[in-house]
Length: 125
Image (cartoon, rainbow, N blue to C red; front, side, top):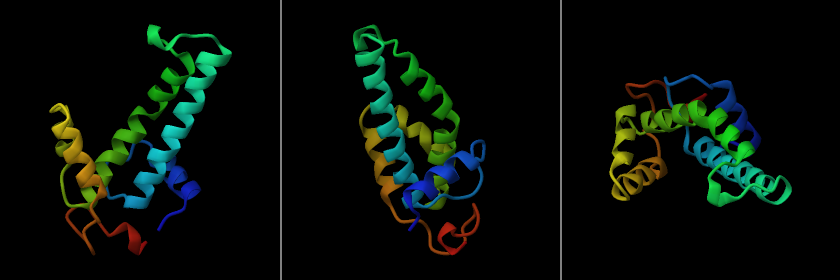
């Protein structure tokens, strides 16, 4: 199992890496990191800077979202690779509600033991 700091470091070190696999712990720790930072930035945007959430413009939160767009997309795809699915499965998320539920189920599944068509098992590194 990967630690919280190691998971976040791996996500940023593999910023544009859409190849290979990522383990479950790296995925969920990074999701937690993004949620915490987003919550803090939203609080700063609204309470300190005085922006309204109704306007939809929260400068710090929006900037963080842009910075995290590519690494999160890469992480989502690497996580799908870990269960031996192509990154194209990410498009199922476009189906309202059901697609998102399917993706959560996929991301929660344990990875393929040993090597699969996307590379070595990340837990063996």
